[in-house]
Length: 149
Image 1: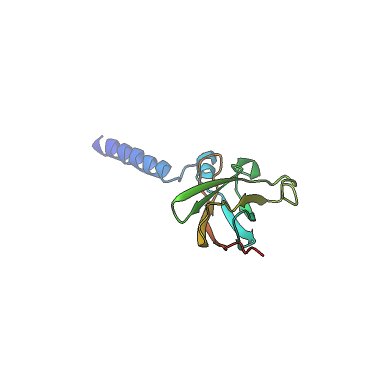
Image 2 (image 1 turned 90 degrees about the horizontal axis):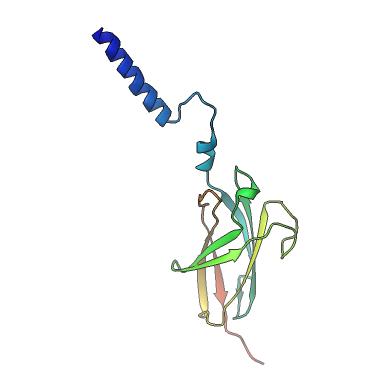
């Protein structure tokens, strides 16, 4: 009798460990998919330098296992590690985007009048609608002095 109870308790513990580790025989993959973050790549920034008022065009590829509809249409930038900037993303074939629904997103920003001259480093990332943060990419932009002629 004691062996039966001990075996039953061991079975319960093993079953709990297996379920908590993801070794479950049910086919509910929602929990696994929701933990997968989007991935950004192939960032292009044009131009890489300019003066105050210059329009900066940014394109990047975004992939998410839950599909493009799961991407928040916002690009998060952190300048110099302290200043957050949020830009609207487009993948609709308009607003600077060339082809709709191709996973290549477009955003633009303008160098503010108050931007200090010199090289500025930006870290960019996105979130999906489940709150998962993508990897981070980095680019540098040089603010130059406007030469008057």
